[in-house]
Image (tube, rainbow, N blue to C red):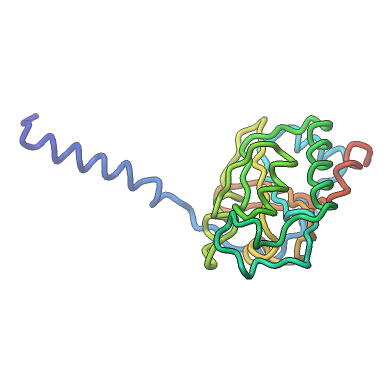
Length: 211
């Protein structure tokens, strides 16, 4: 091929490759409610088997916090001196959930958290090293990033763990509102997600013994 035409062709092809992932992103709708439908719900041994098999997203609202503090004076997401933080109970619950996850043999994988101090604290106590991810917080109402984290497929043998907040999740997934420390177990399906279980902080210790 004449070199005069080769460079523009290469540049055009590269532009198409770079643009393809953005244009191929599916639209992801909100859901009306975040309780599992009866046909999708798993519990006990079936839920544990699914968690061990992987391919799921587990979204937590952070554990118990000290409501005598607020975020009103914070200067940045990592300004822990001016945020609401985990209470002593919240710190203990996050560590205890992590112990149960390991005891139950549930695989980890991608570990993400809102960059706020309480969510990062919960996530690291529960999972170890985590990646602070602004999309989890859905700043300024930008929820598409969080939707993609819930809907993007996960490889078998791994799970995606997310520690975030109650309000952004409710905004895209519907009621009921998550309690502090409550988790939603989700089957990601590219252009939507399916909730298969909700677990309170204390449910992890009972999971292996629930029929």
